[in-house]
Image (cartoon, rainbow, N blue to C red):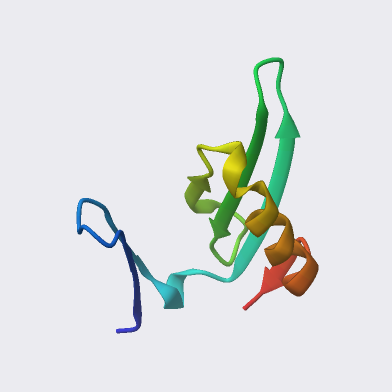
Length: 77
């Protein structure tokens, strides 16, 4: 089993995902009337979402765009 774990420094948040179930990661940016949604979506082999990580703050938009510049808008695993 190959599990990815993301956790906050204070351990108030943990996220675990089995990497063998993920075949693609996509970065989606969508404008809404209230704000810009920035989503990192993990997809299985048939393209169905396993999980969606939504950035809650516009403060993180620079880092989000750095990821897209580095990896592109889709990462095929």
